[in-house]
Image (cartoon, rainbow, N blue to C red; front, top):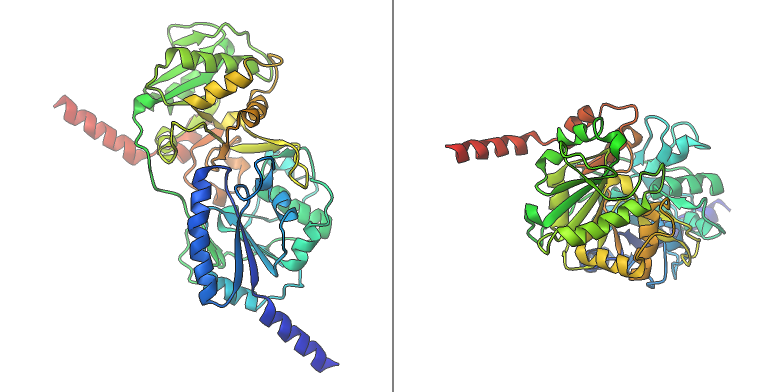
Length: 450
C-alpha cells in the first residue's frame, strides 16, 4: 500500500509540467503586441525545458463583447482547458520558465497551491472595504510579479457561481478574498520566487516596466483641465499651483465662477455634491472648442489630485494620439462570472486621459448626461463601450492616498487623490517630486539667462 502511494506521488510530480500562462493587460494593441512577443519567447523556452505551455491574452484573445476579463475570475472561468498549473501575471511581467519548472517539480498540482508575492495593508483602506471579513495579516498578490495556481485551486474557482460584489476596484485583493472566502485558501508569500527590484536568481516571475517611447510629445500637445468650484479656489488650487501644475504649460481650472486672479474658467455649470457629469461634458466641449488641433491629449484631474507631470507625459509617449483611446486607473461595475455583463470605467480622481478622437466619439454617442449629478467616470465607461473606445489601465494612477496602498505596490507613481487626513504638499514631495528634474530645469534656466 505504501509503495502504491509513493508511485502515485512520483507520477504526479513527473507529470505536473502542463502550464497555462494567463497575461492580463488592456484591450489594446500595445498589450496585444507585448503578448505576441512574450508568447513566442515563452513557448520556445517551454520547448527547451520539455514543458507543455500555452499563453493566453486575457483580454485580446476573448471576444469583443466579453467584459471584465482583467478581473481574473471571469478569465479563469472561461479557459478552454485547465492545466496542472496556471500562471497569472501582467502583460509586462518577465517569466523564467526554467525556474518555473524547478518550482512545480517540488509541488503537487492536486494540492491547494496559491503562491506569489504577498502585499499587506498597513491600515484599513476604503479600496479594500476597510478589511471587512479579511483575516489578520491577510496577504494578496502583487500582480506585476504574478502568482501560481494549482489545478485544484483553478477547478475550485470554476465552481464559483457569481462575483463577490458589484464593483471591481482592486482585483488582486478581491481575487485573494474570493479564494479565502469560497475555498479557504490563502496566498503563500514567497518573495524569493516572485520578485520586483531584487536580484534573486530564483525568481519565477519578475516585474518589468515598459520603457519604450514610440511617440514624441511636446508640452503644447497635452491640455490639462482641473475640475473645481468656488469653495475650493483658495484651499485646493493653491496646493496644486505650488506643486505639480506649475510644471504644466497648458492648464485651465474649470469652475462655476470666474476668478481672474487664479485664473479660473466659468463653465456655466453649477456645482453639485456628487456626480459632476455635466461639468465633465462641458470640459469635453470646451477642449474641442479652445484647445486647437495642436492639443492631442486631454487630461482631466480633480482639484485634490496630485501628479508627477513628467511621468504622465512619458507614459503617454507609448500611445498613438491618433487612436481612439482613454487611459486611467481602470475600475469595473456589474461583471458576471462568465464575462457577459458589466463595463469598465476610468476612476476620475486618479486622472483621466483622452485622445481628441475619443472625446469626439463619446460626444457623438452620448451628447449629454442623463442627469447633471450622474457619476461622470461611470458614464464615460458606458459611453466608451458604445463608442468602441478601449479603456487602458495605468497602474501608476491612484484613486486614493499613498497610505491606502501597500508600499511595495507604489513603484514610480504618477498620481494620488484626496487630501483627507494628509498634508498634500508633503505627499507630493515624498512620492511625486523629482529633485533631479527640477535641478536640470533650473540649470537650463540659468544658461538661458546668461
